[in-house]
Image 1 (cartoon, rainbow, N blue to C red):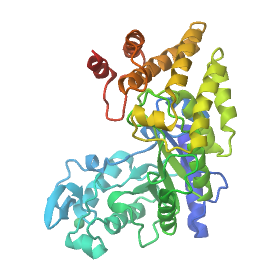
Image 2: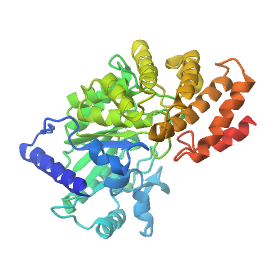
Image 3: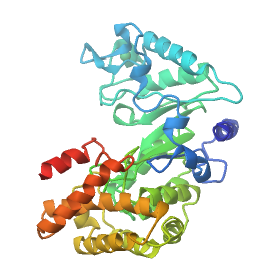
Image 4: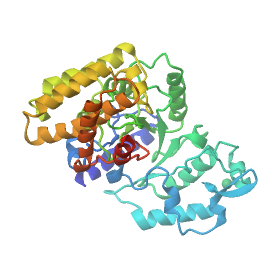
Length: 433
Ligand SMILES: [Zn+2]
């Protein structure tokens, strides 16, 4: 709680500096001075203070597309958008006085007005689709089909003025991609998605790079508080290795150059992911210092938490990072085993590594043994996927052994699902039968 309050005060000092100087420069001289979000299972509440990280479950009042939940019980058709001349509950109308009253009451009820020691972060985003209200009021504000930025800007500016101690965030996404035409109050920020930037070590020759930078620059002219919504996991497969650290370092260097104030790395949430313990730690260090020596940081982590198997883990994991760097492959945010193997995963090298790790793990004990048990269980899934996709020659005995190991997932905390959709490992095991 103390950490949170001091962070809020820092944020306020920074926002005052911005509003007084009248520029949108970051001011503090440190990279990403305000928000280091990591949505990963290893970014636990206990570790956040030591890692200087944030987690929206603990430091965000209203997050994501949850605005509609906040207005449940509020009455009036008028809160909903008019699309093609018809009222629909699929989207909100941001010029609606009824919507404003409902959100205002929710804020007062849940958070009050804030005081010198307490401020809340509140996200005001349209529902997750491309619809934009074109009722007469919204049109008058400037909305057009597919562009809701004018009405959302009107709405969030009004809230920011009524609740100057809270911070409000919108997003450059779907119908709010276009930057506003007016300068936003200093307690309004925006999340810009990094999605156009391919996840690769050198993205500077990609089309997405130019479009991302131009979106950031357009918003910078109107908003001093820009956070990036970033992605650091293969959302189709949480269990297989995903060597994203050098690619994330390149992105963080860019964010620092652009003077951005925060980042939110979307990972596997509460679900187990291979190497997530090490990657969470190194990503946290990279957010503090994008010039970090990543290899040293990886090696130091493994030495500390995996004293017996550190050199094996470092050499394998760093090999993946190097392969991704040398080929400059795009790491797929939604990728099949076939695509992972085309990008960075060599099935033969993987099988030898997994087998060796399994042997050596038998000499470990305590915490290291527990961590390896979880990792080896996840990697059994990777090997099964390699058989299933024909990337390894079928071997019934070894596949049976991998199935047996994967069955142990039910004993491991957080290891029920294998992807973002929530496909369970149990279903997968059943399908193998
Ligand atoms: Zn409207």
